[in-house]
Length: 337
Image 1 (cartoon, rainbow, N blue to C red):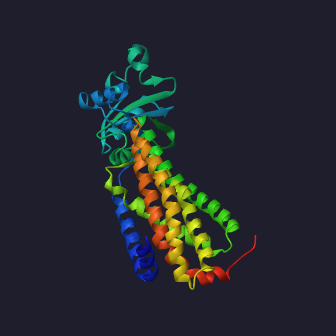
Image 2: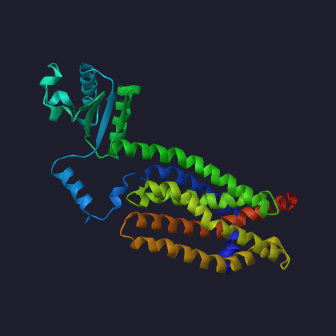
Image 3: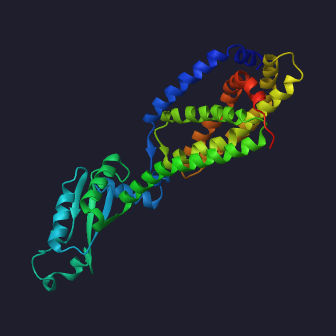
């Protein structure tokens, strides 16, 4: 650890350039990470629900499905909408009453048992099957086209529609709560630390670790939408204290050493002993999720364990460079709260 600490302190520019390159690579590689929005795919294969789904897909070729509900539409208009839906790319079939009955004849002559499957009061129900699974991008695009076709006069439900809403909600809300978490933690750190600069450096270091973690998730076949949406916040929460430990140790060592470089070398060595034990405990805790029968535990465990490891590495290598680079400004911008 002594050699590593000296290398970090003596090669600050090299390390900063290296991390800048790694950040760019991570931003690029994030595009190759597949997000799985089908949480049922993580269920054990021996469950009856999964067995049934596999039979439907393999034997009956039933994959993505959705239900289109139209209100106060005459039969001929419902038929026109159904025909438009059936022509949408990605739609395998669209089934309605006209596929089993002649809608031109009087309703009293229709088979009531068939009619009630597609018409109830003022509502008409169109059953849609897709070429791909509920969670595929092709199905999502097809649903968007169907929404344009029916406009405000109808609603879409079913597994495919739910999957689309989950995807869009996750992507949208992830930005909101990430910003909220950033602001809350920043306020707390500003109040707890002695300088306005210190929290910013912490976020740069841990933020880099978060980007590196997200940028290396492509090594997995896919990660769940739950992991995708929660990993960055959890990684930030469990590893921010590593940065605080390093800074406090550096401040203490400055009083005992000849210069800042020597103080940082000592701070890195002494901090590593404590935070490495903490990080190892956290990593083992996350890795324990792998034994869950529900496969999402393995997904979350591996991604977060990797994230904590990246946080440990950045705190030991990147943060010391940032602290030494901005130490004069840290001392200059002290505050009392």
